[in-house]
Figure (cartoon, rainbow, N blue to C red):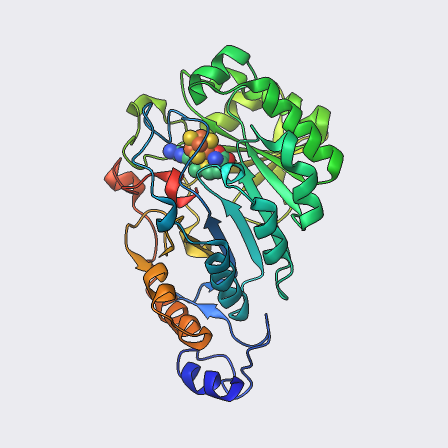
Length: 356
Ligand code: SAM
Ligand code: SF4
């Protein structure tokens, strides 16, 4: 089996890697290298396109034409796909959605993925509305840490941005995640001018008080929503300037992982992260690909080109062939996105099916 797979893979590996030494042991010699010499070691897996909220920058008020259950990858299919990526050297896996906590049986999937030899970091992105209920089960199933999306700390405003969400349940979810040790808990706030940009300092204080990692994200013009209005976009520079009026910021190394750049708010003793997909995109060091809820391998958030893994999986493909499709696919990863030029209308299906 290993010999056959080696033959199938010969010539598909990065030229710098020793083909003869390639084995199918997780995380060993095989690496996913794209056409621009970027190593892919991180996958984001969306497990549902459904959500219990309707954030105004992500979904229309009336929701989306959601997929039938049969169109979603089953947990077994997700496990097979993740396993193939892990065979190819991926070690970090993030579960996302839609809202991952609305998919029934999630702890079973977490358990299966966390047991795959080679998965070093298993995390999840959630709106935390159901986290209080599931945090403990997820932790015992093997989830390591959690990112929570939260765009306002004011009850009325939170309800408006999410079109119906309840801030109190989210806050209880955050406390529970800290309690059970899903750490570090990271909070991601999408900053929107005229909507929540007057809460930047409140968020920094909130994070400092609870020892939570905080990242501010530039709003992206994605999906059917695009920018609600162009004025809504705020660059990292502007966000940081506003915070620095109250708490001076100085560059910091942060945790060194991921696309965020960090600044230290010394007065509060914390680092604050900024993710700048528009003003300072990180395409040249991009290390990730996405699996959508319906099993498409999406090579770049800003390009609608996808590879349909679901039909391949359902056609009875074996593990070697699956690996080979993935290795081929990765070579086609685009050099970068062009959100600025397009200013709206990339990600036709929207972030909720791709997973952010
Ligand atoms: N429902 C989960 C949540 O909200 O955390 C996971 C899926 S959601 C699509 C993943 C992330 O994408 C969230 O942090 C959300 O804020 C972010 N997101 C969605 N649309 C966005 C946009 N237009 N610009 C920037 N971030 C966006
Ligand atoms: Fe749902 Fe997350 Fe999109 Fe908000 S950002 S609508 S919580 S999928």
